[in-house]
Length: 116
Image 1 (cartoon, rainbow, N blue to C red):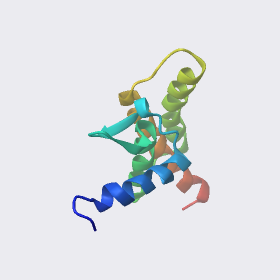
Image 2: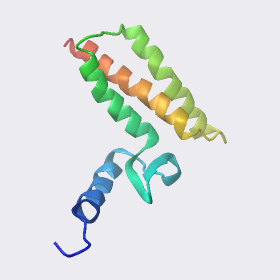
Image 3: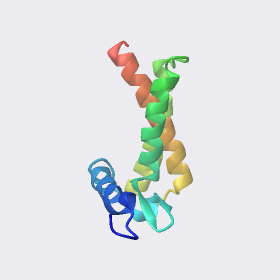
Image 4: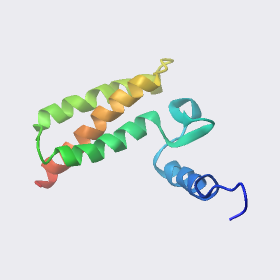
């Protein structure tokens, strides 16, 4: 490797942006940044995917009823559709909270519907 090159920044990071673009809009103002580097997923998607995978692990110890999972989805629907159809602009804190609730609910619902 050439002097001053960084395998992560030169190779892995650009590939992560390509993969992220397949599952997320990656709008700059809605994404977290590490220095000048944007995360490959927006704030909502980051929280959603992390909480989904955490929910799979938590599922070993705690099971939510279906009606609670449905309730956990509602905040993201309200925030997302309000932002989509009005001039309202959400912030990353709300996006993380609603995304995390949604991701956790989805992990629970998959177990319920697949009867795992």
